Length: 341
Image (cartoon, rainbow, N blue to C red):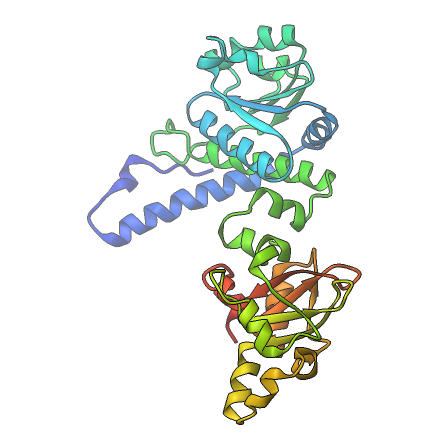
């Protein structure tokens, strides 16, 4: 692998700077390719060990490797595996109490000789936890002490001095991702599981279910089919969260119709004010569109787009009314690509 030399660090032109930056990326890509070819079945065995463990995954490393370990712990956590980072220096001052006998400890060290990490090994053994090493050589002190060693092999840093962790941390992070996603695959982790751990942000909103955003209880305007339109609107007047629809139920609480503010406006526009004293069941829209509780919010949004409706009732398996999705509640909540035509 060609090293970037100090002679290549010239700053005379932007072109030279760009060439240098591209060389850094090239060297890191080459390092990844090398590890991809060398990677052995130990990573599969490590994933199986984590999958079968009843405890947590504790990830430790010093310096840049420790930062990579924090990312690995975060990726494991977000894909269904309980994982926590542990700083090795803090560990020997009491934080070793976080480790239990049924845990798996993942220790990251490119050299495999990092003093702060090696200092933990006797305690990990006494505590009875399993140890997985991610390091360059199985023959290093860390590699020999581990129950499983994911060996990365020799890696030349992209740093011109060959000192600052660069290619090695890139490789370590990528191998950590591969390990975490292998475990996730073993767990048969789904998009719905992912939503459970990512309720915030556009991703979480895409994966939300209708019951997470629907209106319920007193937030819904309900009526029986025999009540007059006028009496319904008088009865439902007063302070409450505004909704553009009255949902009509039968005696068993099953949804049978909907009467919207637009329906009310049309009565006045067509000078049919006398129908205000008719039973609402006679002027409602019967058998309205509805969606089942537990359905993904994206499906509800798509239904509202297709049928050009602003209110969508939510029902259970027996068609009993349980909620209402109002388009005003979706503004700013659902990603734009889901609501744009």
